Length: 276
Image 1: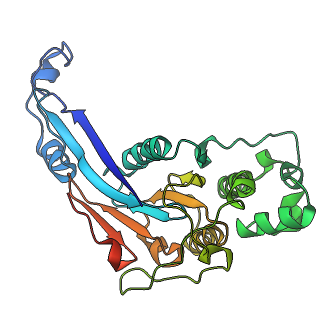
Image 2: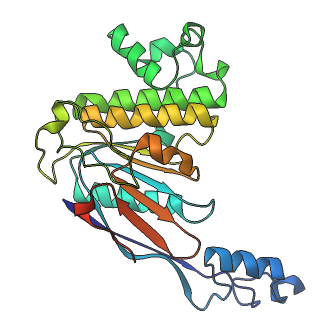
């Protein structure tokens, strides 16, 4: 078990006409009703004399092979949480192989199928997992794909880059289902014990499936969750779309509300529930 602690504070926004404000007369004007409502909704202060706290010693139990899903309204701090969580993972598991989907490149001078490593059968399986099973798509170059197809290609390449390391690891048995988070079956490899702080493969995916239509997004979430299960890959994903929870079936669900309120829910009841 690895208990990580997440902290994040920001300076409040100033409308006082102080040093950080502009020199014009508008900088000293009182905030509008709309500004006040937005600030209240997301817990943002309007006086630079104090800090706004998004996360204050938020404790979260993350284990190798876990699927962690962060959801909540746009602008509530999901991306910040994911970034801090990735930093904490790097500190806790220094030997882990971490791939951030946003940093996965797509060379433009090669066909899609040529961007995947051999053998061909495995490349086709990975592309199919990412929803790229159309033969015509496989012969195109990345710039000829739609934004959603490019996203899925990045996902396939990110998964491919992790599997070599992930195959060396196994993970604990899957957790029992509860009424909030559905379970998914464990593979034979996944049923072997893995020491709690062992290095592992980690996939980081902000805006997870956000550019896809909802039916496709749910299918990709399902396949990603099963891939993580089968190969012991730790997944850190965030999206404002909470319709992915059932299909992704995360071990750890983080729900970020407006302001500083956060819920952390574990699929395995024995891991308890942490709230700030």
